[in-house]
Image (tube, rainbow, N blue to C red):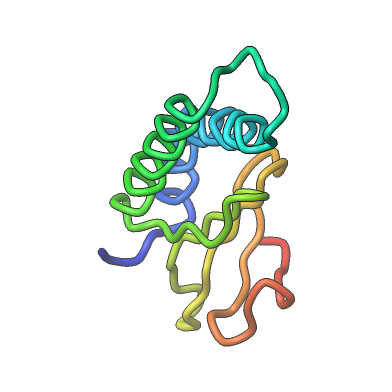
Length: 114
């Protein structure tokens, strides 16, 4: 996949948000189902179904060209180029919008506001 512009990445994030919301729910269900404690969510079959659905959602996100860097919390990077510098436009679960980036060579710790 190619590089995203800031506007393209923001539009793609908006399109992905329903999937990302579902990932949060499925992730929480998996944790509850794996706890071993009785739960109204079910048992092993439901846990396996949740794992399969989470894998499907992760694949769908990555097929857009975005990079899924973390699941708990969700961390999505969109490869881009800002003024000739390779960067990753960065969205972290809880962010209201795509408004951060970091240079490819610096990683998450080098995150800056767009």
